[in-house]
Image 1 (tube, rainbow, N blue to C red):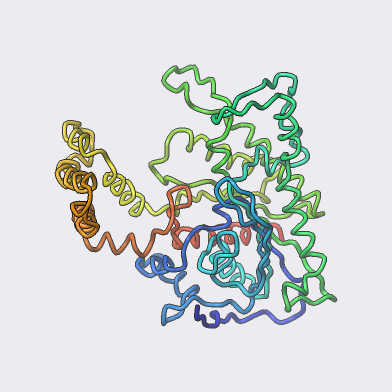
Image 2 (cartoon, rainbow, N blue to C red; image 1 turned 120 degrees about the vertical axis):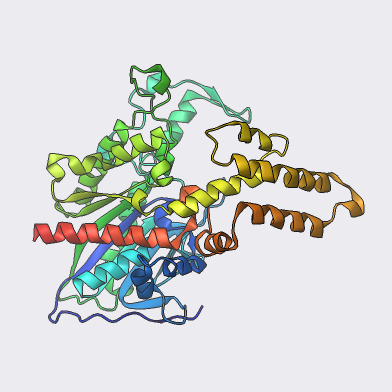
Length: 432
């Protein structure tokens, strides 16, 4: 991958402590966007200025001379625990995912360029992120208490694969897992702070360093996790969850991080989960409120700020993704939607049904009748019904992952990083 130098900034003269920022969370803090989707920023006049900070005139991703990053993660795969990994250097693409994938990026790019542009001095980012981790268990802070308030109520259970797990085994597993990633986060942060010069050549031992901000971007595992059903008094809303425990635990995490890192007023930005954007379901909306709740607490006034990342969800891409799902529908059922006056895709379903039946018939054929070329040809015709050529180009330039990963959009992740940085800058300005 070829790169160029970053946009230069007129730095303020005079020695200062190195500003250090912590980015922490799960897979969306890792970032699951491919480098190719940076092209999406150039398609939108609103994000073109940010694009120019991340990509040069020839389309190559920039390397940022005044922003260094130390990223910690793990090479997990589905159902398998991988090895711990660490990568550090000047900020550019390649610090997304688990940091071993050279073409992925997350919020760190937008965060870094925005922060250095505002501070006009070198900065160091410490990024600690692991996919599939909850606050309720994995990141559970020390003051959050044990996972089971009443271990005597835990029962033996049988897994979906028929494996019996006794109550004692269940409790032991949870005790071992409770707060493991909170402790790992602190371990990695402290390892960098113990030797800043290893990670940032701009560090001056005479001036030292300053923890200047913390950005938390996590939540999907808690959104779908084992939180109790809310007692709303409305039977129609019986499935709504009570996420107040998440609010309590996040407040505990803020207090504990500040205490454990000896930074009592550390500015703390919460990236409120925004997957689904404006069309999110009821539980997602309830969870967003629970995530944002600590920012409204009196004790955190002026030092904790919630950033609504739903504002940066790509609504156009989300609608195209919803349309894309029609391609995999059962052709025998695809036409039914045309009888539903509330179905916005009724006409599309009607047009797709014969093509999908044709595709199913070809796939069922054996031998020479099951032509790969014919399958590809029908599949393309289905795509042409679903999307205009311009829409297909938009998808190609903006999407590289699933909805729970913000569709793998560099445009979305970079705007989230920019917003988190601006929130911290604002808190620092008010606190100075």
